[in-house]
Each structure stands twice: as C-alpha cells, then as structure tokens.
Amino acid sequence: MRSSMRYGRLSLLILYFQAVALLWLSTPVHADGDYWLLVDSRRYTLSVFEGNRPIQIFRNIALGHGGVARNRRSGDGKTPIGTYFVAWINHDSRFRLFFGLDYPNDGQIEEAYVDGAIDGHTYFDLRSARAHHRLPSQETALGGNIGIHGLGDRNPEFHRRYNWTEGCIALTNEQIDQLAAWVDLGTMVVIR
Image 1 (tube, rainbow, N blue to C red):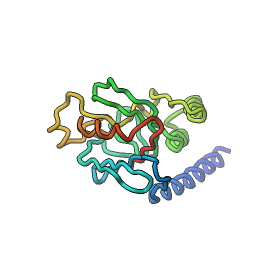
Image 2: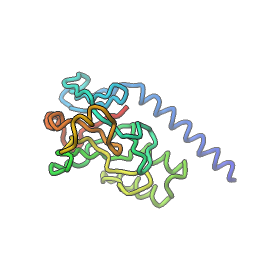
Image 3: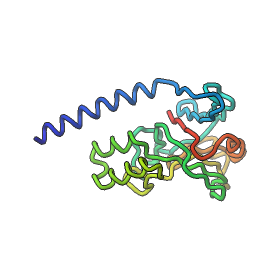
Image 4: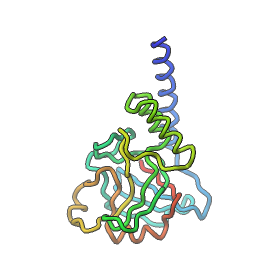
C-alpha cells in the first residue's frame, strides 16, 4: 500500500511539474487596462505591464541573498518563483513602502506537502486560507512575508552591488514610489 501511495504522489508531482513548466514558458495574457508586474530574476528587472504591453521597466533590482527558487523554505533567503497577488500594503514600512504577496501559492503548498516539508494540518490550513481568499499563514516551514519594497534607510550603494533581501524584491526608494502608481491590492506579480 505504501508503494502505491508513493507512486500516486510521484505521478501527481510529475504532472504538476509538467503543468508548471508550461506556465513558466508561457506569457500571461491580460485584458487592456489590467496592470501586472513581471520580475525577471535573470535580468534583475521589474516591469509594469498594461495588458501585454510593458509601460515601465525598473532596472537593478535586488533579490534574496540565497538566489531564486521554486521551493523556498523559511530562512533560506531565496526569492520564490511563481505567480502571486498583492495581499497587503504597508505604507509605514521600515523599507519605505511594502507590497506584501500572498506567498505561498497553491502549487508551492502542494509540493511542500508531497515533499513532507509541511504536515497535513498545515497543508489544510494553508489551502483553506487560499480557498477563502485569506492570506496564508506566514509562519510555516515555507516562510513568508515576501513582497516588493524600497530601501528605507539602507545604503543605496550596497543595493546596487548585492542581492541583500531575505527573499523579497527590493527597489530604490524612488523606484518604489513610482511603482506605487500601478500597484493596488490584487495586482498580479509574476516572478521568474
């Protein structure tokens, strides 16, 4: 019975990764007038799109000091790859302005459960929060409090040279102020 459960989980995981690969390679299609953000971890850019048309590109962004990864864990300093939505906005952040994302997404919750990184109770809590359009717990083995923010009083030169965040996407204070014109609760953010 255990081997059939393992085989079932493995099959589910393979199908899931195939679906993720297809989504990864495709470009999101949006109606005109919808603003969304694309974080390109290879080019170190954050682009604002209106529909399928880029309208602003912010360069020299900083990412997590641990790099980027599909499967992030608490404390690893990695920026999670995936599709998220702005779930909260902190105008009084120590980083000047903070756009909090609804990390982890459904796929990351499923993968963490299949991999044994979270237990059944945590899995149920995370899935239930997402199903009811609530912010998933930010205090699990998957980590949390991922977002897009400015520098606050941090050194701009350090920002230009290093990926310094704990997994967030950082812009300069001037850039985050400009970005605020296009971001609201529910804005889609694709990190790749």
